[in-house]
Image 1 (tube, rainbow, N blue to C red):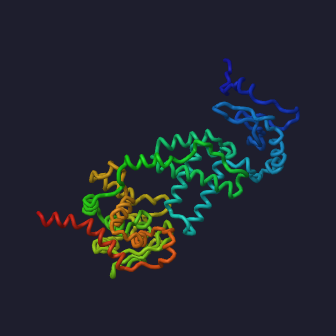
Image 2 (cartoon, rainbow, N blue to C red; image 1 turned 90 degrees about the horizontal axis):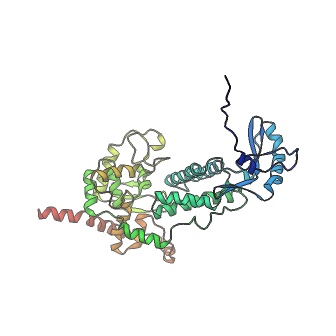
Length: 409
């Protein structure tokens, strides 16, 4: 019987394209992936590059990069042979390490209250996508314009222009952090193709999608069909312009249900806001608190809304739980689909309807919007009557047509 080797044969063409050792005693060999490498303590280590992939083909660097690679090898060989991990150099930073450092920094920012859990979740999705697209061991220094062009093409297939632009900005933020934190010695060149959609494209997209608002009839249908606590959240969305994180992180200490007010800074911006509550909203909140499940942690005991699992509606990995619940309801009522409506649409609807009052200062106070105008420096408070007028106008828009129709019947 003749033994046959099952090991794969090396490509002669691949070996032929690799550079030879610059001198006989050179300690490194040319790895097929473009590195000068050496096996130390049973592990292949890379110390620099002799070539890079250009338009799908391995291309040798000027001088084959052996001098630089030899310098890296000499600086690290003692630590590697002793079983220690040498300190990373700028040109050795890989994507996994960069993304981990970035995520740690943003987690600390979230714990300090500087960014919301939703923002942290979005950054997590971005870094996970980068590692999946390019590989966790891909060197950051090895990324080129064509890589980012490919990434943008992938994103454009999944997302519309608005989300595409947001994701491109988050990718840029990750690499900007790496440069400013000293992890890389120069800014990344993304190339001319890795840019956000133009204003012209965004305008056409908005025009094609129509107004991102609910009608009064649609909101009343949602309220009629929603159970607790979703009904209370929907009312907070249209009564006060609350978003997902606003509802998910709302503490009971912010409520004054007896007099009918909420005083609660926006989690996203920290800007204070004051909102008068409708009687329907007060009733729904009381029901939600009465039916509130047992909290799973003392840290969650102060929240108004708790999921059936005893956890908050907004926490790591769950900032879209409220959106998911409303989406189910929209689907069951055959409301969603025509324009991609969601929970945040309630906030857009509140603003759209409230703008008819022309009291934009009061509207910003309710919604917690920033005001960068010069007048804002001289506006320190808004009279409660003005806030009530805005809330009353939106309430009349939502419920008066329903009452009129009922009386006609």
